[in-house]
Image 1 (cartoon, rainbow, N blue to C red):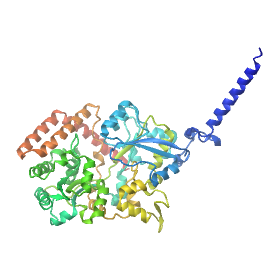
Image 2 (image 1 turned 135 degrees about the vertical axis):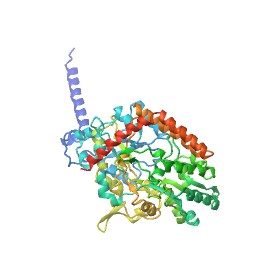
Image 3 (image 1 turned 60 degrees about the vertical axis):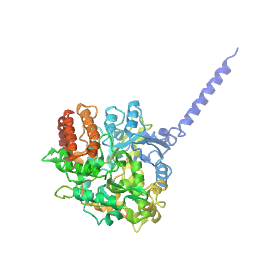
Image 4 (image 1 turned 90 degrees about the horizontal axis):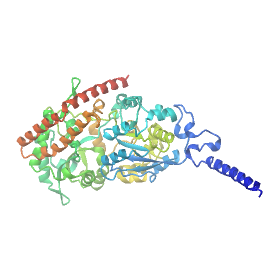
Length: 555
């Protein structure tokens, strides 16, 4: 039997298969090789300099999964004008992943699995940041930049890279809302704080604008408000609002009120124990007295942010220790319904000398950090997209959106179109969903640039912002002092925090000052037994390192 025809047919089939494979590879089916059809090297192999915008090398479609560790984040990519424009410009689409419930549980589950989405954004203060780095679950940004995109070094701040450099010499995350010492020198007049003591305008004015800086004035104002306004639209008035209670305490009753009392973080180069400051203890007892007087609603002990936002929108709080930025949507709703029902910032709890508050301005640590997972589907595209978002061009795009759609150059200045500005000032929620500008996507936002581009603040926000001017300070050297959770000091610190979280509600609910004192003394003894002194020694060393790093950053 003659087998030659079969051999010939097999050879022809193999040649045809090779041609098909070659054609497929050059057709752009793999985004990494999308330049092969022009004879160019694969995008990740292109050699770039710091002046080259790496994101321009490859604009083929790609979707990154981006985890946001805030359950309240409501926005989707690709439904608004701005994110559509950025995808059109860069080729990058984003699939946001947001925890449905407890953020810490979700992060711990992902870390335990060893599988993380492409990008991860979370508070720099979260223990999960250290766990991901120590576990080798995220990639060094500097190594990605060296290999794929030196533009990183042109658009990032050396001081911030130095600040976030780990012991192995690598940088794994980059912050948003961050201000270095040089930023304070350059943008100082524009730097404000979000920390405010708020009162409902109509009620406060009806009470004669009482002085609430002293414990006596504070308690009397709450009591008078409850008497004059027992209910709001058929529902009970909540005299005092604050952040939700967590397993480690309550932000309003810790850093917020301590900053209003101008309690120092350090004295003569030594960290100061703010929690035992007499002024702070006095005001915790004031809160206890408020509860005894029937001025602390049970709601504040159980409500989480969604419930609080609903009650803010209803105007049910008389006073609040709260961030002005966290009630923007509700403030708009109140303003639209009745401009006199909004919240305004006033002088709140103060120390015995009535010193001006020392409110937290943006620190070099920022608010959140963004990291790139070791599982990222395309290293080159990931670091290049991150660099685009960090760059001033990316900042401009995420703030303004698309020219002619949300903004234009008017009278020689880039400005939002009138209809854009109207929607921004009237309905922030609708603005985010329809237009997506003004840092709807805040993951990499540079708050030093925002005030330069922003239109002048208008009511109901201008008064809140202006009140913080001159009261905002940098507290950068006191960031990132806590030991890691896996170290001996870290375990101690976690237990101490949890102990305070347990005792804080009990202090407020104590029947008398004597009971408060007993609980407080027991707490101090227990935290010492848990290793407080050892933790403070660790923090003192880290504080001294921070001071040295900041001094180096200012050179």
